[in-house]
Length: 177
View (cartoon, rainbow, N blue to C red):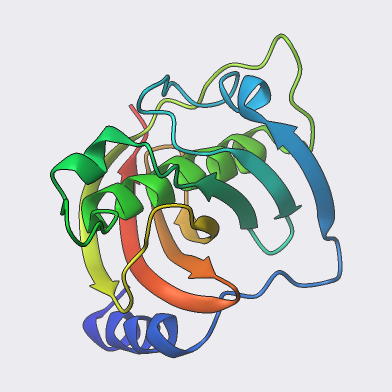
C-alpha cells in the first residue's frame, strides 16, 4: 500500500462505516467460549464478547465488545469522567482482526473443539484516530476488513462503532510467525 492509498483509506475510515456486504454474509452467534478456541487471549484481556457477522468473500467481520462499568480501568482513566482508553479500543480491533484471520485462513464459518487459535502478532499501527469517547456501559460494534493477507503478514482496517457512529478507527499490521 503506497502513501496515497493509505491516506485515502484513513480518510474513508473517518467518514464511512466499513460495510458488511449482504451477498455471502453470514450472521453468527459465537460467544466467548467459541472465541477462546480461535484466538489466544484470555480474561482479563479477552475483550471480544461475541462474533455477530462474517463475510469471507469480502474479508469483513463484525464483533461485539461490552464495556462493563465495573472494569477496573475506569478507576484511573478517569475517576471523575471515565473514558475507555484508546489503546484498549485498538486492542479490541486487533482481537477482532485475529478472529477474521482465523476464518479466512481456514476457509470456514465454523468453530469446533479442534479449532486452533491464530498465531498473530500485531507489529504496527499505521494509523489510529479517536473521534468520540467510549463510556462505561457502551457496547462496541467492531468491524474489521482485511486489506492484504498472506502466510506472513496481514494488513487490516478497523472501526469501533456505537449506534452506527464511528468512534475510532485504525489500520493494523499483523505478522504471522
